Amino acid sequence: MDRVFNFSAGPAALPLDVLQLAQQELVNWHGSGMSVMEMSHRGKEYMSIQADAEADLRELMSIPANYKVLFLQGGASLQFAAVPMNLLRGKASADYLNTGEWSKKAIKEAKKYGGVNVVASSEDKNFSYAPAQSTWKLDPNAAYVHITQNETIGGVEIFDAIDTSAVPLVSDMSSNILSRPMDVSKYGLIYAGAQKNIGPAGLTIVIVREDLLGQTVAGTPTMLDYKIQAENDSMYNTPPTYGIYIAGLVFKMLKAKGGLAAMEQVNRAKAKILYDVLDASSFFHSPVALENRSLMNIPFTLKNADLDEEFLKGAKARGMIQLKGHRSVGGMRASIYNAMPVEGVQALADYMKEFEKTKA
Ligand SMILES: *Cc1c(COP(=O)(O)O)cnc(C)c1O
Image: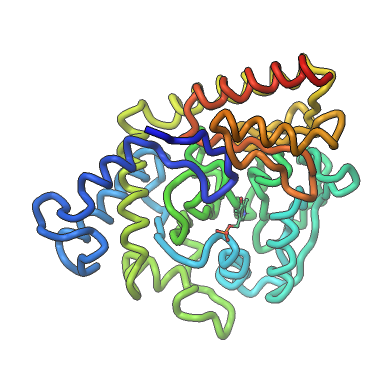
């Protein structure tokens, strides 16, 4: 089969076994005589699919009982607005850590609904690191503290445990959710667009602590009110049923592979293959601070940017695509989410070493 190694940041590669199972079930799901796409979202078949997806996600992430899991639409970008609308709760402002392009967008949107206090920023070094919590200027009266746990463009990931004491911690985990175990109880809210490490685009997952619900700002659209979504099991209107079904298959596959602790081992091993190449090279360069090197998105530059196009062309000829870096960082970016097999990472590492040998 002619499958490429797809290093796209998102929408990204999905596990082949999930795609093949979906293909088998496409026109007749479990003897129902119909596709999941054709099912009433209120029918018992689809209700069981969504209930299973939620139960499996809860088990995978050990989500405590006092948290709601919401299956929404609008992407992580709509959460940039939904978070302040729901969590400001009458307070004047929220704290935001600025670590890159996605933080900046979250900050810009939050300013429409309240004050934003930027607790620390890494803009001074082109967002190549995450400021340590010891340097943050936290406001004890903040409604919440927002972080971007993994900056998909910059390849900067926060691994330190963050302690915001009584102030709820909100995390955009769009590109690192399910990559390793996370202690959900340390967060007030976690959100993620599905198209990086969960499933197809069109689904957004929100995990939110119950006591934070029910105090939206005036004028919040019904669809953006977490409490109403929770009370309706994410079925206030028609949910993105097929995306939830595929996400559910991904959750089952992850459970079968040993869960998130097992994924972390694999993901660390995969990332190490590429970082070892970068560290041993005088031709390729990683711009990211050691302690914040993302396990999921690995940007790197070539010593001579004139060779970028040739590098990409050679990669494509070897079945490796979507390696071009974001314009704000330049160079290359390899996104190696859960679905990227170790063979793909090894193929890229081998190609990089070969390229360096002939071009350096
Ligand atoms: C991709 C991404 C977003 C935007 O996601 P959409 O679902 O396209 O709105 C936000 N934050 C992070 C960290 C991302 O990687």
